[in-house]
Structures are given as C-alpha cells and as structure tokens.
Image (cartoon, rainbow, N blue to C red; front, side, top):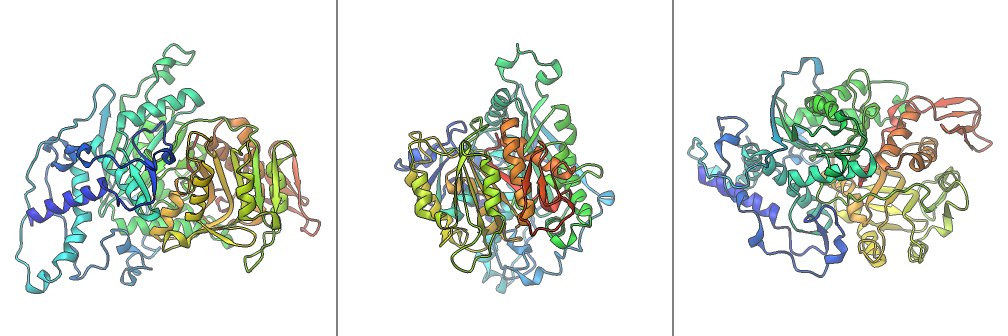
Length: 601
C-alpha cells in the first residue's frame, strides 16, 4: 500500500505538470506580467527536464501540518463512481449522495468545532525549494479477491487522496505552486488551452501585488482555497511594499512591510460534503427571485464567512487590504462572494471582490478605463426561440451614455459577422458590452454559448474569433473588459464552473463581468447604468463593481416613478407601461450575482 500511495501521488503531480500536448490553444504561466498567450502559439512547449525536481520528492517532516501522518481512507464502495472528489458529492452525477448533501445538512457558525492551524512565510526568507525524501508510514491490509479485481479503479481514487496528502505535507510555497498548477490544468483540460511555463512563486505574486498597489492605489490580497475531504486549506498572499513607495508621502502604517508575505490556514473538522451542501444552499437561497423579501440566505452566508474569511481576517485588516482576489476549488467557484456576511456586514462592505482561474493565468496589467470607448451590442428580440429582453435598448443607451462614448448595434445588427467587422476597425474597443443571453451549461465546453440575434456562438468559436482578431498578441491591444449582462450558470456542475471561472481566458480578453444567475431586466439595467458611471471615477474595475453594489444595497440606486435613479442624480426612463411606485435593489439577489472574472485592475 505504501508503494501504491507514493506512486499514485507522483503520477498525479506528473499529470499536473504535463498538460495534454494535443490542446489547440495556449496560455502562459511563466511571466505573470506579460501573459500574452497568443504570441507563443507556434512555439514548442518547454522541456519536461526543466520542471521542478522538488515536486517529485516527499517533504521535510518539519514542514508537516501535523506530525502524525494518517493513511488516507479508501472509499467504502468496491466500485468507485468517479475519480473526481467533487463529483462524488454531486447528486446529478451520483444519485446515492443526494441525501448526504441535502441543503438541510448545514452547520451553525456559532457551534462549529473547528481547529485552525496557522503557517506563514516570512518576508525575509523564501520557502525551501529542495525537499528531503521521507517515508510515509502506513498500515497495510490484505485485499480480498474481489477487491483486487477493482484495483485500477481504486488506484485512480487514491490519486486524489495522495494529492491532498502531499499538499498537506508540503511547505507553503510548494503547496501554493501545486494549487496554481492544479487549477490551471483543470481549466486547460476543459477548454483545450495549452499551458506553457511555470506557475508564479509566492514571492513573485507578492511583488506583483505590490506593483499593482503602486499603480492603482489599491492593495489586493490573493486567496487560493483548497477544499479537501475533511478540512479546508487557504493560501493568502499579501502585497510587498515596492521600493519606489518607500519615499512616497504615505503613512508609515500603510508602508509597513507585512510580517509574512503569505499565510496558510488549515481549518480542520469540516467535511467536504457538509461545506458543499452549505455552499449550494447559500446560492439557492440568494438567487431565488421569490425570496427577495426574505433573508434566509444569511445563515449559510455567515457559515461561509466564518470558514473562508474569518481565519485570515486579522491579517487582512492589519495590512489595509482593499481587494480580495479568489482562486477557488471545485464546488466553490460559483458563489457570490460579495454577499458573504459576518453577522453585521456583507463582505462587499469591507472589500472589493474578484475571481481568477489562477494567478498565473491572469493578465494583471493595469489600464485606466475611464471614458473608454464601448462597443455595445445586444438584442431585445431574437430570431428563434430565445426569450426577449424588453429593456435592452434602454440598457445599451445607458451604457454608452452619449454618442461620443460608444456605438450601439441592436437586434438585426447584432450578428457574428458585424461583431467581427466592428472589432477589425483601426481603433479597437477596450470594452465590449453584450446584452444577450449566455449559458454556461454542464457537459462539454462547446455546450456553453453566447446568443447573437440569429445564432448561438459557442465559446470555442468565440476564442477562435479572438485569435483571428489578434486580441492576444502585442500587435493589438487586448480587450480590457467583456460584459455579459444576461447570462446564467448551471449550479452544482464542475464543467459549468470551469467555463465560468475561465471565461476571460477562454474568450481571449483580460477580464469579464458576468452573472451567476439571470437577474431581472430591471435589476440588470440599474446595475449596468451605475457600473459604467463608477468605472469613470474609481480607476479600477473591482472597485467600480463594489461601489455599484454598495449603492444598490443602500438604496442610492432605485426605481422611482417609472425611472431608475442613479447615484449621480441622473435617471433612466422606463417604458410608459411600467407600473407606478418605488422599488429598491437592496436584496443581494440583484447586486451579488454579477462577478468580475480575471483582471481586477
């Protein structure tokens, strides 16, 4: 059993480090400041000999989270249904688990019996790159004959357990590297994007966050969360103070170098199935339009806050963090993080929020988007069976504000051919707003699509268009922001999660703003009208979204007498057949659905 465990662990790590060579696209993890993957499409992948040797060795005992190593538990079933740890708790894939992960199986945050283990990386030293081989002591048992027949299936299941064990035993820097490569490989495998280079180290991420702080005035923390069978591990990287800021006119408190540039928090005594049930309940409660007069979502919102945010909250506050950038494990990627709740406040009242598939696959370069030219396309009616979007003409008009801000193409002008034609112009559009249906469905990558007036465009076809237009090359400036204002994402499905989490990367843009569930036309119209106004004032996308969400939460954006009132005092007139009266968008159903994916700057 010992030999089997070690060999499975090494095989899993080898798979992480060696993506399928048949992938048609490329992504670059080797340089987090210059991630233009399209420029290296024709280059051969780097030699496997250059990969880290330390991933092939077991860690030093001093780096163990626990000094006692316990043999991973084998599944009770003789025939496992899946090698994916998340599929085993998905009722759509494994009906036998439906009762076990019922949304009623949640946890009271006041009664959680959690053990949080802390580990940090000092600013003065980097984590050791070379690991010493150690033996894992395990007890062996004699397999019954019928179990031997299923050995290959059991080996596949052990891969996941072996990865978790190796992650737990690795030091902070190596563990985060493994997580980065794991998430990147998941995205690559799903969307057929080839990944080149190495994931960034803790120090590289910290320095990059510091550079962005200098450029934008906002301090971001990167949070990578690993959801394991019986515990949660989070890896938080804080920004280093750039040397150029040392002499700047900034308070000493702001310029204090963090005591640790990276934090590792292990929350034990929490089952994966239980947490996934809580996450599912949270999204179901908050996304139900029939419950916008209720606050049933608060219990699960507080549970998730306690598990994911509270273990690192003191360090976030001590380092004056402004933005939380999440890279989440399967089962957690489709959560509206902005609506996490500490018992008194929503998370968005403290921090701006964004998500990335991984740090290394994100183009983090900053560009000021104030008064950027916008290509606004959409449809209020469609050729075919797609549902109409009656307020779309109003939305596109609100987005562009006036003729000098952008151009509108509605209904019959919203075609793939015209989309390509407009994006071939000599002066490109930094922002593309598509007011239309988009679906991130379960199943294959090409089952997800964006609806144009007369056809559905698969995400892979959109990626081909972006390559054709040269969005990912230095010859053309990249599209800074793609907005999908009426999209919807399947809940509880790994493929839908990957499609949404990798939206920016898959479509060849730097960042995307999209919704986890379909919000009413009225709520979308209000959010979009406010967002573009905030984008002109706040310098960065994540803060523009946060300010929009706060203004909806506090009633500064609301409906009054057939008009949507924006926080700047302007109004968006509604159709004359719209009923009289006032309406607030304070429920998180309206404002927490929209999520920023990719570049948050």
